[in-house]
Structures are given as C-alpha cells and as structure tokens.
Image (cartoon, rainbow, N blue to C red; front, side, top):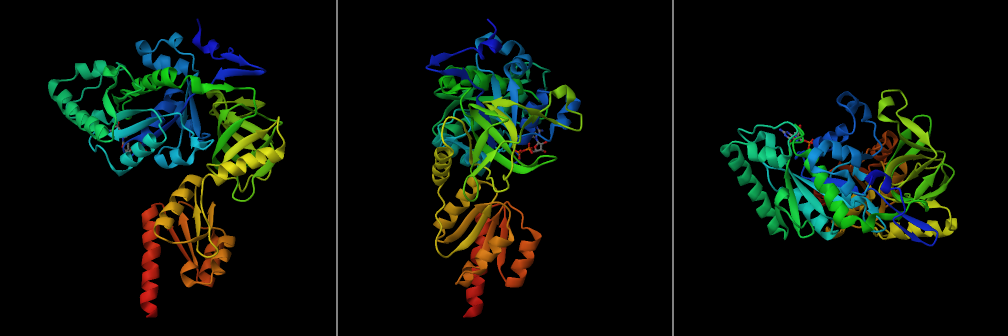
Length: 468
Ligand code: GDP
C-alpha cells in the first residue's frame, strides 16, 4: 500500500464532509543559543539540495517536510508504509514566544514540539518556560539534546542512526555524553516528565524521548523527524482528521509587504481550504478585516526557486500548509490573530467568531494608563500580564510599530506617568519619534519584558524624586 496516496483518500465519511488526514504542525522551542534556528535550517535544508537552501530564506513562515523526505533521510528508521500522515509542517519562527502566540481555536497552534537543549548548558530559564508551556498546553514533545559534536572525543558517523553512532563512540566520549544526558533526564523528571534515550522509550504517551543531535553536523536530525512522525502517527492521528474541502481556518504569522501584491499575510492554515476567489475575515488591531483574496502564494517548486519570483500564484491551498494571502486592506492585520474563510456562513457570523477568539486573548484596558505596542498578540498578552502584576494600568494595547496616533493617545493622559508608550519588539516610526520629542512623551523600547517595565518604573521613581 502506498502511504502517500492513502493520505488523500477518505478516512471517514460524515454526511457531505469527507475527512482527510492533515500534516501535524511542529514548533521548535528552547533557550536562546541552544540551536533552534540551526536545527530548523538543517530541516529546511534537508528538503532541498545544499546550494538551494540559501535561496529559500524568503520563506512563508512554515516549512513542509513530506513523508517521502523523512523516509529518505531516515533510511532504515522509517518505512513510509507505516504512516498515513502526509509529513510534518514546521513553524519557522523558533521560540516559545511564537509558540504561545500561535493559537488555533483557543489552543496551541502547534500539535507537537521539539525542545532543543544544549547538552553543555543544560536547562536554562527559557527551557523551563518552554517546558511549562508544553505542560500547560499538553503538547507532546521530543527533546533534541543538541551540540553533541562538542563532546570531547566525539566521532561523527556519517548518516548512521544516532543510536548506532552513540554505540560506536569511544567509552570516554559516550560516558561524557551520558553524564550530560542523564543530567537532562533528571531535570525533565523534576518537571514531572519521565524521559529516556528515545530508542529505549516504548510508550511515548508516558515518556519523553531524548534524541542526541548536532544541528551543526546533522547527526540525529533524521532521528528527530522519525520520532516526530511516529509520535504523530500514534497519538495525533485522530486529531489530524479534517474536512479538507471545508472553509479554511488559520492563524496569521506575519504581516508584510509582498512585491507586486501590496500588504500580504503569512498564514498557517490548520483546517479546510482557502481558494483564490474566497472572502476572508482576518483578526486586526481594530475591527476584524473582511476582504476578498487577491492572490494566494506558495513557494515555487524547489527546482525553480532560484528565479526572481520565488512564489507562485495558486488557485487553492488545503490544510495544513503555510501560504501567503494577498488582499486589499490587510495593513492592520495582527500576527497571532485568526483567519477564516467565509463560505457557507454569513460574514457577520464569521466576524463574530473572529472577535470572540480575539476577546479570549484578554488585554483589559482602562480609562487612563500607558500605551503598549508589541509585535504579536502573544507578546502583547505577556506584556499586559506583566504590567497587571506591576499594577500599571493600560489605556491602549495593540500589535504593531509605534505610530503617531499612539503618541497622540499617550499625550491626552491626565497623569504624567501615563504619558508613556511601552514598545515591545517593535519599531518606532520616525514621525512618531518626532512627535514624542516635541510633546515630551516617553517611549520605552525593549525586547525583554521585565527590562521594559524596570525602565518605566525607574523613570517614574526618578521623576517623583525630582518633584519632591
Ligand atoms: P537559537 O538561539 O536557539 O536559535 O540558536 P542558534 O541556532 O542560533 O545557535 C546558536 C549558536 O550555536 C550558533 O553559533 C550555532 O552555530 C551554534 N550551534 C547550534 N547547534 C549547534 C550544534 O549542534 N553544534 C555546535 N557545535 N554548535 C551549534
């Protein structure tokens, strides 16, 4: 039986709706510098030949790794006929920050995750944050115990499964790695996860598999893909059944200019289909945007990717997939917000659904307070929570760069301490900066939440001291 073709046959029939199995969506999490980006680059690179890898830097926010590629890479580890899921879809922006931003119907967008931990560095603050999020969202994950090539005496074995490579090492190298891996396994157990080397794990529902990897040399990367495939097949298959012909549902990853098409949104589609003649509702900083699709874009076939136009216009895209949607009026679309196709329901109904989903991501604003701008909904929520804890009220909270209108809002505050804008991981537009200078409005910028709040508090404390 051919597993690839089976994915496109009917898994079950429910009235008119035909269920298809979609690709599981994978997120990569972990502490800064532990190797998330390098691992993703490796995986992305594995879907193209070496020289071409660089050409796809202009990606669309998600990389599909078909089952065929996984099985080619994994060799004897994977028999494609064991699988009927079509492959894996990796979200290209690493980090728990993007993970918690990306929601589908109130849950996490990602179905499964890779937690990257540098074996030399062990658990670090962001590793723990990531673990907490994975635990809270009940997301299955595999640990990539990364940078094994730095273990003294490590001798890479070309293309061998990592278990074989591990067995082939000198006693000294293996003992050093073991020491570090067991430390990691100990840390995981402190967070209530029983973990073991992945080749010893029998039941991935109760145990976390640890895969020694080197994102640098590629060792262990096919093994990570294999474990993800196996985990998905065993534990996520039912959740992957979708009505592929139904109206598309997805999440905005990024809002950006697309040459020749104006403002476009990068979207991860997790359900249904978007067609080039659809009307879509997109969550925005103001009211949801209702707009007609101008073009759907996906990366060109890899063989042609070196050409000027890296994207091709397509008529329809089915879940799960990454795509660009170009349409009029997308300027205020918000990263992290829902995207819904209007097809068999009224626009009003769909708009209401999008509004409800956005409202579930709660930022409470007051009559008076500071203006907050952040790069994504998730970060906006995180900053708002931190401000709430610090008892700093918010008058306006939005995703996007600091614009003149934000400064205008700040300048209408009655209290001096509210004449401020807190900018998290966003730019300040030149004219906004000028206006702030002229009106004596303070703009605090940082991409670390606590630092942003610290700076604000120090400034307020100093101002109060100087006024006494
Ligand atoms: P991120 O912040 O988690 O995305 O980490 P990066 O992927 O940017 O990696 C941080 C640094 O570690 C870079 O200099 C990488 O080249 C290096 N690095 C990543 N993975 C490995 C690995 O497996 N082995 C070695 N030796 N270096 C690695």
